[in-house]
Structures are given as structure tokens and as C-alpha cells.
Length: 111
Image (cartoon, rainbow, N blue to C red; front, side, top):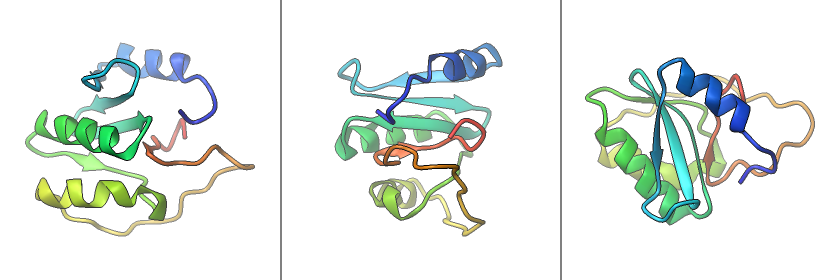
């Protein structure tokens, strides 16, 4: 979904206690949840991404979603509907040209 495998990254996060949420249609999208944070999310389309994010947000009373930029406009309505507050932070810095980051929520450490 982002142009490269994340198998090793995801295995590391899941071994550290992360939880995997998958789309209703297998292979179309997933999110990895940490404690009170959506660690990362990737999907084949914005509708699937919105559904996975909605399900992920329902898993926690308090949840933080990080690393949003203009390409993640599909997520804004989902976050506001869930009662989250959007707070600007800093830039997303990437070396080179990563694959398009939509519909995708990067994790920061593992972009």
C-alpha cells in the first residue's frame, strides 16, 4: 500500500503489545493500535481506511492519531465524529520520495 513491505515493522510493534485491526474484506486495509494511539493505518481506498479508523477509535476511550497532513483529509471527518480534537504539531520529514501517504497514517518511527 505504501510501496514496500512492513512485515518486520509490524511484527516488532505486535510483539511489543500492539493490536492489529483489519478491514472487513481481508487484504484491503489494517491498523495497528498501541496503548491509546493508532500506531499506523494503511488501506486500498479512503472508504476502507475510514471504516478501519472508525473501528480502531472505538477500541479505546482515549486515542491519539499522529502524523496527519493534507493527504489524510479522508481521516478528518472520522476523527471529528469520534470527538477528537485536532492539534497542529510539527512537520513530517521524510528522506527521499516515499510512496503517496494516502490512504495511510504513518507511524513516525517507521514512516
